[in-house]
Length: 198
Ligand SMILES: Nc1nc2c(ncn2[C@@H]2O[C@H](COP(=O)(O)OP(=O)(O)OP(=O)(O)O)[C@@H](O)[C@H]2O)c(=O)[nH]1
Ligand SMILES: [Mg+2]
Image (tube, rainbow, N blue to C red; front, side, top):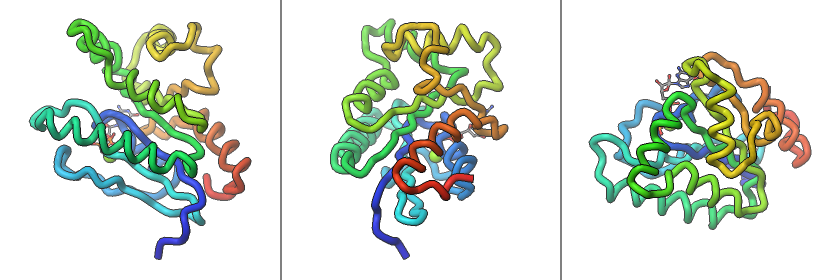
């Protein structure tokens, strides 16, 4: 049933940040869920009129999953993006707004580059735009404070409001995704996939 892939939108992010929830909210199609983390690397894809939407496997350390598996996932993502960069028109990197600062601090204490930052820098080196979807904002109290930290860590000079074309505070679960939907719609329209988004 798969028609030819003319262009692609990818979702990347740590495990459990809400990639699949956002995917479903935006495109109105359920992607496979409930898959046990750490069991498969195969991405979930949907093809809509030649546009492939790809839910990449969650990266980063997952409790109960070996470090070796986490490394394999990261390698898979790097190769996947390199192999398909010519047809990718936008990458959506989802982060968990509630957990972000804690995770970043933990890595930095160990003297390592946090994987979300590493992934953003990797994605940013390609020609397609990279959106940062800061999800679970319904659980964040000091919203501007958090968003300024995200901007700074990702190499964008605060205030975050100067970066509203890159940083999108959302709550996928509550369907509060208007900002990213609009930006995505613009890109899809430019590329000839105007009718796809709700
Ligand atoms: N509070 C809150 N919870 C959310 C939000 N979005 C997703 N969740 C919850 O976060 C959990 C993980 O969501 P998924 O969409 O499965 O996350 P994922 O990134 O696809 O996870 P993996 O497929 O394991 O990599 C679920 O329990 C969701 O209901 C949100 O905006 N707010
Ligand atoms: Mg998922």
